[in-house]
Each structure stands twice: as C-alpha cells, then as structure tokens.
Image 1: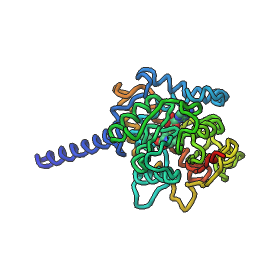
Image 2 (image 1 turned 90 degrees about the vertical axis):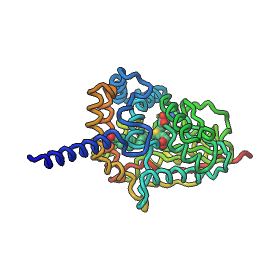
Image 3 (image 1 turned 135 degrees about the vertical axis):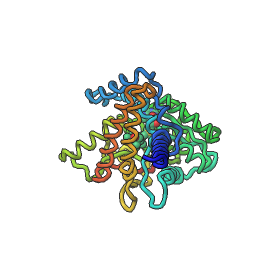
Length: 358
Ligand SMILES: C=C(CC[C@@H](C)[C@H]1CC[C@H]2C3=CC[C@H]4[C@H](C)[C@@H](O)CC[C@]4(C)[C@H]3CC[C@]12C)C(C)C
Ligand SMILES: C[S@@+](CC[C@H](N)C(=O)[O-])C[C@H]1O[C@@H](n2cnc3c(N)ncnc32)[C@H](O)[C@@H]1O
C-alpha cells in the first residue's frame, strides 16, 4: 500500500468514525437530551433495574393495576424509566400526530397541538389546564400560539423538573406553570379554568369517569374541554387473538391499566355532565398515518440500542436502561401494527362543554 492510499484510507475511517459519533451522540430530533445523559428520572441510578422489574410485576398481578390507588405509582415508575429515552429519541412532546405531507414531524406535532387550543377558543390571558403535561412540549407550543396562561399537571416529579427547565429556556416561564400532582385529585379550586386539554394522558387513568369528573369540577361553566384519547376502534375484535396480542402489547409497553373502546369516551363525558360538542377519530383518512414516524425510525432504534448497550456496559447509563429501551423497541412495533390494522387510535378527539350556569 503506498502512502497516498494509506492517507485516503485513514481519512475515510476518520470521516466514518466522526459520522458514527455524531449519529450516536447527536440527536435524531431537537431535544434537550443526549444519550450520555440518560437517567432513570427520579430513581437512583443503582435502583433503575429493580424499578423496571417492579414495573413488570404489575402486569403479573393485573388485578392490582385495576386497583385505582396503585395506578399512579405504577405510572410514575414508568415515567421515571422512560422520560429521558422519550426526550432523546422523540422530542419534548410525548404524543403522536397525523403525518402531514411536506411537513416535518416537528411541524406536524405543533399543528396537532395548536388545533387543540384553537378548538378551546380561549383568549390571550385565559387560564387553561394541561392534564398530564409530560415535559411540556404541548404546553409551550400552546402558550406561544394562544398567549393563554397554561398550568400543567403531571404525576411525575422528574417531568416537573424537566418541564420547568424547558419553560425557562424557551422564555415561556411567565405563561407556563407546572405542578406535580394526580389528575384524579387536583389541587385546584372548582370552576377555576377557562379551558382544559389532555393529550394522550387520560389513557393512564384506571377509570375515565374519575378523571373526567375532576376536569369537569375545575372547569368554569360554559367552558370547553378537549381530549385526544387512546382507544380501540370499531375494527378491533376481542375474539381475534392477533388483535388481543397487539392491544396487550400496547398496554404493557405504555403503562396502561386497560385500553378503552372508542364507544366509552362520549358516554363517560355525558355521564359526568358534559355536552359533547364534537367527536372525531383524527387517525382516520383523509388523515395520513400517524404510525409512519414509528416505522421510519427502525434503523435509528437499532443504532440507539447499540449505543444504550455500550453506555450501560461502561456504567454511564444506569443498568436497566437496556431493558427499558428494549421494551420500547417492542412497543413501537405493537403500536405500528395497531395503527396499520386500524384497530387502535391514539387520537380519538372529543370536545366537550361544561353547561353554562343557570
Ligand atoms: C402517549 C404515550 C407515549 C406515546 C409515544 C410518545 C411513545 C410510545 C412508544 C415510544 C417509543 C418507542 C420506541 C423508542 C425507540 C426504541 C428509542 O430508540 C427512541 C424512543 C422511542 C422512539 C420511543 C419514543 C416515544 C414513543 C413513540 C403513552 C405512554 C400513553
Ligand atoms: C404520554 S404522556 C403525554 C404528555 C403530554 N400530554 C404530551 O403530549 O407531551 C402522559 C402524561 O400523563 C401524566 N399522567 C398519567 N397519569 C397521571 C395522573 N394520575 N396524574 C397526573 N398526571 C398523570 C404522565 O405523568 C405524563 O406526563
């Protein structure tokens, strides 16, 4: 080999190495997390693996998941385990949105979020609630778009920390406030919000009636509530074993005490006193598939898996991160199958009004 060939080979190797480094340590989306910063949320590094086992133990005793008082703990554990991986591999908005041809995932996400607040019809300065706010991606988009004051509530203390940090960084902390608490028993006065929204969050409630009743309580009479619900659709057949396996896979990988059918949503809303203004499954055509983003990411998930394995081996990421990542990897597949078969929707939209006071 002459020296020119040697130099060229070395340059190629260096460029390849740099490319892998950027791919590995850089981010697929714009977010505030890098692989080397993955943690177990509020869980101490050495306890992550045990907490992951504890999360799975809930599914070995499904009756416990049905016991309402155990669910917030189970959901909190789940979000300690996944929040950093979500932020790293998906972004600050922990939800799906229909694909929009010609638009990026970020734009499609923002449009889906802005639609929610547009339908609430709130004015600048109004006080609105985000029930189940995650790390606040939707809250910031909605506050910036509507100029409303948004109060977010999440059961997970680590998400509160992340959301407050992002709000400050985005210069939106004067419009956005974050509270740690349970949306089944909120620390807010009756009739104190001009609007409420929940994006892919109430699916974690063991009993939809309880959370809708609580949202109804804090909403001012005459004001609107909008929710994007996770449901099984009319195509889901309980006697089809493949359908059952997909839905169970979605429940296990997403901390769900049991997916509801689309029929339950309006029924429960009416039961607690709401008038149903509009109900629509936003996943249905002419919407473009929401699950293509999940499928397109497959190569990146493999890359992420290798990276997480190396980081855990080196002791940089907590032990247990590999298991959590693997769980999400498998879940992504169940979600995409549910979407493709049309048996599952993460965006069954319902818009309700609390009747005006007499
Ligand atoms: C509303 C909920 C969460 C919905 C989505 C935001 C998340 C559901 C599945 C998640 C993911 C699956 C695969 C991961 C991948 C293996 C990893 O490398 C990078 C992150 C993922 C893409 C991750 C991102 C978030 C989800 C899409 C539920 C919980 C009610
Ligand atoms: C999938 S994330 C969606 C977050 C946010 N809506 C978004 O789209 O980015 C679900 C959120 O619901 C919250 N949540 C689940 N159960 C809750 C409960 N009982 N009380 C408060 N928040 C809860 C979780 O902590 C998490 O923040």
